[in-house]
Image 1: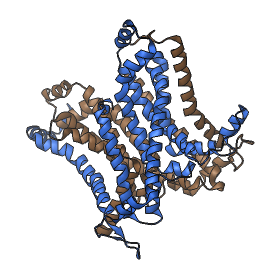
Image 2: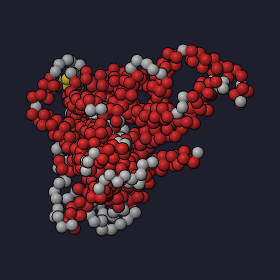
Image 3: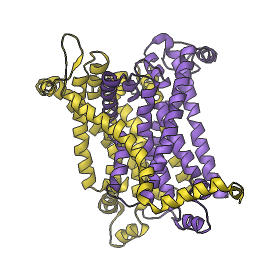
Image 4: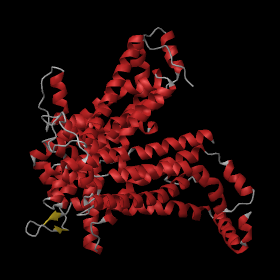
Length: 272
Length: 299
């Protein structure tokens, strides 16, 4: 572990500390402000908030549109995550275990949907769905949302799994084979326990990525509503603002769950 | 061993794995086939359709796409002053966002990598990553509320005696929000780059008589450059491909807004596809440059 060095003069240390504080305030003040607005009694968005209430929570809770949108988002995120877990792991195994022509291209191809600007991925899928509609009756639906989300989620699972495989000693698999385990047993008793936390982390990231996505989703969803799409459509309507505020509050709270799980997982590893 | 109780099943697995072990090509095919087929069909296929569609046209009478080859979409783009202005504005704000993100990322990354104690470092990194988990749209929405005329920003500025600003729905607010949204993506690779510089280099530079500013300029920055460029790929590409931020906090159009409206309002998919090739080209150039500077190894 590195001991704090004394290379930096005092002024530099203080300056860096102030810069760090400013950046942290910049990152967190907006989140605190929007959390407070969920309790704003008034429909107007002016600051300071005059009167606080919790009445919008009940109204948002009973809103059928929000529930449908949430249901769609969860369905899309779970499906995209499952597809990404399978395909991302397979690709990671292949790249890790084999040397083959075009091996470097694999990770490049996988990262492309995230590396290219969102509008390009969205527009490409939109053009393809339109084309597919003319050729074999493909239509904009939850299915096409999942197609798009899974495509850019594969790389996050791939990255997590391959990083873990690289850290894992190859002799473990050989030992398992020498002791007479078949391929399935080696996978189940040796590989899977090692990869568990990497799969959970990659899966959570894929879920979160899909759950939040709006830029590509607008191009692949047609009239299907997801939670981000509901927020996007309603945040400009003055009488819907209070409910948008509540949904924003809930989304911020929910985002702590995966971070908490990831944190717990790393603690588990330390204990084990 | 429990599976010995079912010899039939076991021998099937055994024979299958023995067969696969011998046939490494087949095994590779089983592993690599599904993900590569998915990417080839869904993604490369879609990109291919995008480039094809860009050369088709919309029938002016029926508004249907007709598969008739031609470069008229690109001609419209090249002739239209407005499309050039929009493309330049998009790339310009993407570049400005990237530069500001890097400037803001340097102190916090340096502090976390070199000055903070291990415990503080962990907390700092968590604090940087945490906003990435909360929704893009919610973070954008919070700025829309804060920037509005009688919102939190103007209230704070007035309390501090600076008077109020009228930057809501302007390029300034677009810039602020982009910097806010993408800053964590830039901090992480920059931090990793600072972290990798060995202590001995700082000491060597000091021993050779350099004061900190010179060490920073001549040792730290050149060594961290690949990481900084790697981080800049994110902020640049994400800004280039965004149309939600300009629509919600700005009053000007980005490439994405034109594409989104061409598809959603005018239903002119071929024209939208043609304009979408512009960010592809810009990004290809950017990535080529980034690779030259060694940014891919720093990702």
